[in-house]
Length: 242
Ligand SMILES: NC(=O)c1ccc[n+]([C@@H]2O[C@H](COP(=O)([O-])OP(=O)(O)OC[C@H]3O[C@@H](n4cnc5c(N)ncnc54)[C@H](OP(=O)(O)O)[C@@H]3O)[C@@H](O)[C@H]2O)c1
Image 1: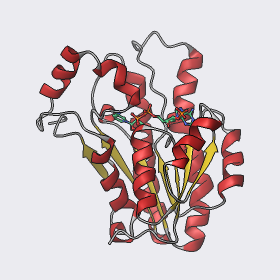
Image 2: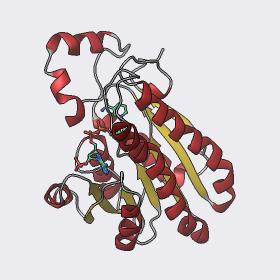
Image 3: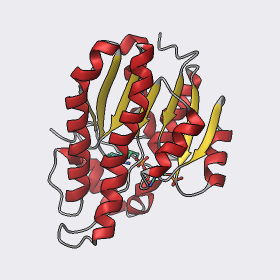
């Protein structure tokens, strides 16, 4: 079950956190994985060295032209995981226009461009898997993450709208919405033990999740066994949304 031998996978934002764990698991199941990040070539290489059968590619998804360059390196892939995101914590009226554009470009526009770019090959081969990583903030109201929530809700809407169009070609597309997961993104915030306890206490399971709590669901959606799941939402948050 969940055998990915012979498949190629592109996982955006896989130099750390949730994306790294997804890339690691897909590789463990036999896929060749493209490991990507924006910050530096060195960081991409360092992450890739920890993942067998992987290739590092630096790409800044804020810049649409970089997606063409990425495609030149990867060629068509069987699995596309849209995991990279930018998250600014700001009150709704305190965004600069640059920040607004950077967050929307990475979280929404690049998802659209990547789906458009890679879905064609998947359709031609009659097999493909696309998984978008959303967030519980696509449903919640949050004083400092309102526009981040907007970006994740937009991405989810793409998933729902594109799923019936891609399904006849053997291509599935789904969305996973994580809750609070311990990653480098929130490491500093969780150093505050009072805050960390407050978050844990708000989760019915009683603890903050790990990247390993997200990756198995991604694997299911990327596998042959997941072929009948499309246009779906999986919330993985220890029950926090309830
Ligand atoms: N952690 C949570 O509690 C949580 C909750 C809900 C949803 N999520 C979602 O889950 C996903 C992963 O989150 P995470 O916590 O693992 O994030 P993270 O620790 O901040 O890692 C983000 C990854 O995205 C890459 N990245 C950032 N900006 C990029 C850009 N402009 N172009 C290309 N890649 C870029 C980073 O690469 P470099 O550092 O190498 O540039 C890094 O590999 C995100 O979509 C996030 O919104 C996370």
